[in-house]
Image: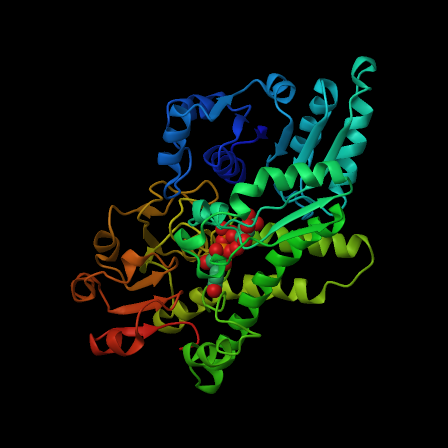
Amino acid sequence: MKVCVIGTGYVGLVTGICLAEIGHDVVCVDKDEEKIKMLLAGKCPIYEEGLKELIGKNIKRKTIVFTTDLEGAIKSQEIIFICVGTPPLPSGKPDLASLDAVSRLIGKSINGYKVIVNKSTVPIGTAKRLKKIINENLRDDNKIHEFDIVSNPEFLKEGEAVNDAFFPERIVIGAESKRAIDLMEKLYKPLIEQDFSYAQNNAAKKDRIPVIITDSTSSELIKYASNSFLAAKISFINEIANICERVGANILDVTHGMGLDSRIGSKFMKAGIGWGGSCFPKDVRALAFTAEEYGAEANILNSAIQVNNYQRYKIVQKAMDVLGIIEDKTIAVLGIAFKPNTDDTREAPSITVINKFLELGADVRAYDPVVKACPPEMDSKAIMAPDAYKAAEGADILVIVTDWNEFINLDYLRIKKLMKAPCIIDGRNILDKKTMTALGFNYRGIGV
Ligand code: UGA
């Protein structure tokens, strides 16, 4: 089938590659010429395991092309995926400027029946907004052509994006038109009926991927509610971890005991420094904003945000408990990316924590296996160390912010010798308290 994917960010690029790999004819469009040049050369603009190889393979097979010619791509393809960014405005409301601009051009360029699929996470009601904008921009000569709007949210996780795209746990199709639903089912058929023995995700190992057909508004809400539920689940467990610290319980045992109840489950129950990234913070805020706009209460959503903001400062409080005055102390920070296996630093907890330490007058030496430059929102006084050992040299405290595997396997005896004082604040509970204490560290995790 002939597919156009507009926007080559995380969602667009992975979607385009996945559809090309299962045999569709895909044109990926972006207005960023540099990015398109990079992609045409087979290079991958984001760090995501397996993606670069798939880009190279599908360019060679000619199942995917990259271009800046949006109008041409809309005209030549039948199914148009919109995967442009919807960054948050200061109010928490998503900025729909790119989405609107693309919709206007779709309206002007339609030259036959098109299915316009929205994969970006967009406010409830956006499918209807797209329809209106496209209709308003149809020219006299293309008014004869029909089009349908579909909401088809994406559920991939950064760091596991390729596996998530090939083995999704569900496919949600929100549409009012049978013609569009049939085309979407045909598009995803190779995924729905594939051999699942290769799935890395156990949950995806089933006979067939469930397809949920619903109206576009419910589909849009499934996306926001899913992300918000997961974020609230983490905030809940972080709140329990904080109670554990007060009453002397251990969060690792508590979550283990809770997670064995299949109604609760053990996933997204890791207590720590809180959630970040380009999705949870933006989406929980956006859903709370929508609730407010429509006069519904969003108490749980707002509390999840509040707990998350507090959780980041817990690390700084723990450092204060150990060091007293932070000024002139040296703090080693391990991890800058918002989570492991990605170079993404959007709304990363590291930014809040490092900026606060610097504001208090500390020297910060940070290391991340993939992020090598200070993110734009981070105070540039933070020094980037070439490895974890260099970061630890002369440090009064070592703080673990991202749960990269590399940090589990460090030579902590060597680290201890390098540090001024052997103290670790483990913001992700990746190290074993008993082992670290036996090595002579003053070890402080979250709720352990
Ligand atoms: C999230 C969702 O998990 C995806 O299903 C969704 O498609 C995506 O947002 C999106 O909307 O595009 P992602 O932001 O890549 O994916 O990252 P997650 O793995 O969900 O982690 C989010 C944050 O929660 C990270 O900061 C992570 O460290 C934190 N987290 C996760 C915890 O603190 N504890 C946990 O147990 C799990």
